[in-house]
Amino acid sequence: MASFDIPIIDVSPFFRPDQGNEELKKKAMEKMREAYGFFQIANHGIPLDLLSRAMDMYKIFFASSDEIKLSLPNHYLKSTQNSAEIFEHLLYRSSSSSFDVCLNNAPHFK
Image (cartoon, rainbow, N blue to C red; front, side, top):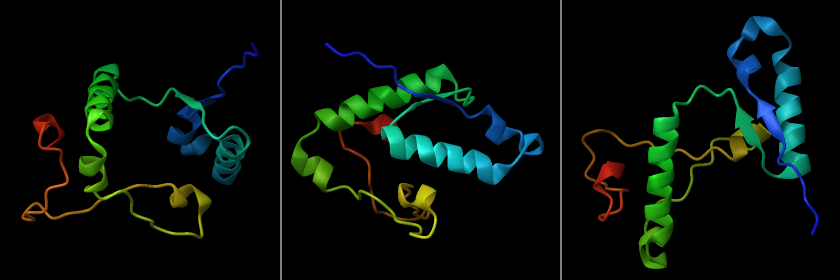
């Protein structure tokens, strides 16, 4: 069986704009995404507790029926000019909106 290593990208330079060419950093990330399709991000600064809670929510979502999953908005395309933005998924709603995008069986999503 073949084995391979998942590429790792250290994103800490993105948090230090004084450390060098921002465009070069973006191109390096784009190249990694195009070459491998996925990668592990290191030094992102996201607390492990938050990552763990997010994983729990992913499990609940993917365990839901297709009908429930298909009833939710699936993406927001910001721009086709910047390839990094093509894959950005956002949903904006006002706090007064009655539109509910959360699963009924996962109140902690709200």
